Length: 239
Image (cartoon, rainbow, N blue to C red; front, side, top):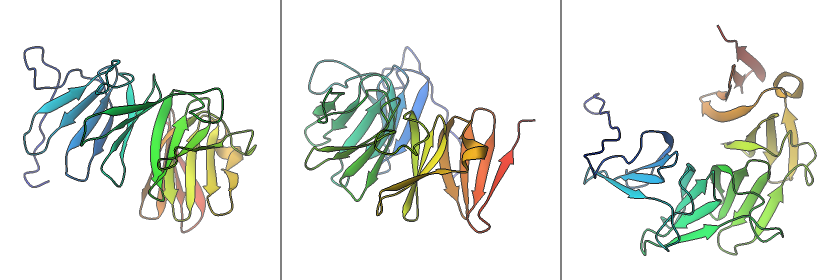
């Protein structure tokens, strides 16, 4: 932002301190200004702001290795630990003090993830980690007690789909993007409702963001925004 200049980085075989792959799935900036890059089959590439080189983590059986190499989402907790969502092998927690990685995977009972294909992570209230799974609905992990709670079409039939892509907190509500439209959840009342069902239910939404008084929803062929002031939905059609 200071120089208004861009720097371009890509994988180079002769550069061991550079990116280990080109496809970037997710980017996250931590509290210290460092950049964590989730890659497609390259694990994590970490850009240290002061040192200006990349450190990588890849999958393996060791305590300091990831559970998988397709990193779809990254979030930092209040203690500075990094939580890592994988598309191919569940949830990992990286303790940056010890360097050890704890792995969480799916389970047939109510003591684990419902599915290992994860697409988004969001902390609510400091210790409740919301986990978006593909086909497994929403998993909510209390990171202190390690107990799970689940939101899916069985517990909340109004949920458009158990294929969850992303979350967006707006005021006291949480917007949920699914392959069958958008839902809105109220944590206080545990009420979940579809959002503009007739207009949005046939679309697969993957990402959302808020800008001033507008909430933006993106899917493969269309872009929508909801005006919080007028309470109206608008659509940009493909040209």
